[in-house]
Length: 437
Image (cartoon, rainbow, N blue to C red):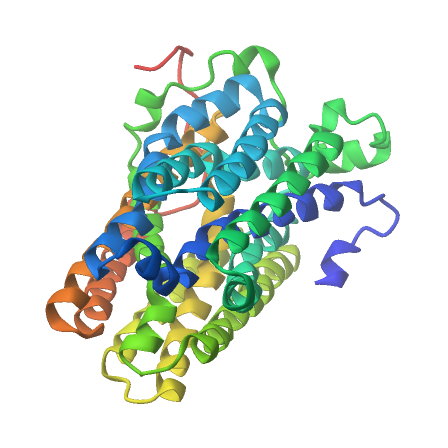
């Protein structure tokens, strides 16, 4: 990894500061999300939540998050990453504090709705920002650094929040994520600039970025961009969306229900379940960085066909995700963690590659819109996974059917990547620009 980062040692590395800043934002972003999964028992004691009600509460974030994906993508393309990112980061800290103060379920649902709205620009914004700052050969590792933060957040966040909850209660765990979110807002406000706006970016590094195929900033095109209607007529968009939706279904099933699965199916107490939960997420962090980031960039830099490398990693990673089926019949925590680690590890390797695709195939100044459209499909899956799993567990008192359902959905995602997305190459520029069709 370090070899890739320093592959052009004569060129300054200011761009990597942006990658780690955005990665910290994702880390904080997922602290906000996993907080709820760790707090299920405490919220049950406070509000009398059933499994089904918890499934709905877990998906509440994703309802507004999904609804805002396409609008946030359009706003990112027209207003820019810097302006939208500042507003977003401030509001998601407000949402965390609001959850900590919730007197009842209605308030708590409102806080989760606000969190979904405020965090909706995160991943489309990261795709757009990294597209500006990184060459095609470095973009895989840069994206992996930000994407791996989501897995690492779960690996360290679940035990940290669990310990905080056990000692101080669920309200303080949500307040803590509020303070960390506000810290990110301050850092983003002070640090993030597009390359053309960063006065400390050297001319040498700027030319290196541009020569390497970074997305060009185009203020005129940004006023309109490629219309959402034009993008929705492209087969590649549907292939990418289907694959991302399949990935997100399994990801959010595990993000939301893994501690409960270990508790309900394998009879572990909260203290042990939160630490066992970190194991597959740590493995996913490793494969995200090593395979989805470093290996992809290294192979492309050595002359391998970029399309074949990216497509192979995406599809193979999804195939490994099918290991979730093995957890359906696991009888011990060790066996369950092996299967879940294999599944999450494979999906994590595919995820950063998938997130580089919008900046590689979208028409100019349309990365945010394309990323938002794709992530909207992902969030429909994120809404469905907690609710469907809640009904399955409530009806069967087992997670087996939930894991089988995830396996079938992953198979659909693999079909989307192979037959609809196909070659990872640019979508033709539209003949004319316009607003939303």
